[in-house]
Image 1: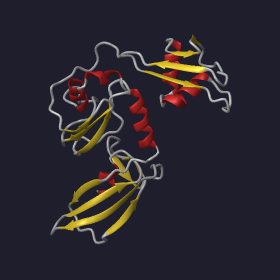
Image 2: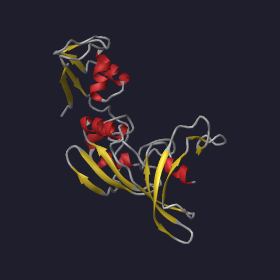
Image 3: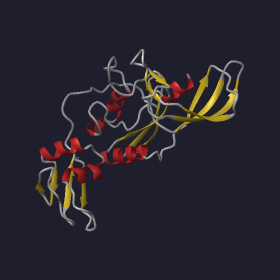
Image 4: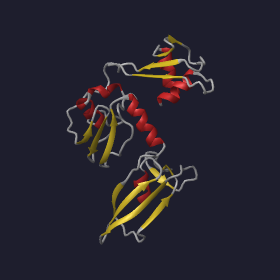
Length: 242
């Protein structure tokens, strides 16, 4: 069944461009909304309009999400550990060693391939190559992931992650003795100057990054930490604990 989003322009709202209004209401990028408008998937009071059209208060906006394009990523029967599932979302326990979505060097055998086998309907949800994905975990990291099964839920989850209302907690075993029982690591993260495929700390152009930690248990050569990343940089925890 085709998924749609319908809403009415607030009588008290300030007039603006159609593409800007729809992007804000849907959570989609403005570029994607403009493509949908060009393809006739956005109607104002039942009529197609240009991206620059300015709807009036009280007019009804209808956005229909097109079906997925044929081809693309093929489903694979990869086992999933499902913690919860309903018509809107799926919660899984991702094992270490499993890549979340296809990319360079990982064309098959990813979590996305497994999700498409379990729930084919998510093929139309989200970005091409990342259906249903609203957040990710590194290949070697295990943990809970939430997957969207509808566009509405995807936008809602993405907004929650963006506003940091989702609390992320990680466990890490580090090969060192951590003296303080708790603390906060605040170091900027950027691409490594010598190896652009790696991330590093301390560069002037690095992006702000902060991770709070608490010691759970100490061993002769290791320390078990409970971590709360306050920002979401690539490989943040691994870089901060290096």
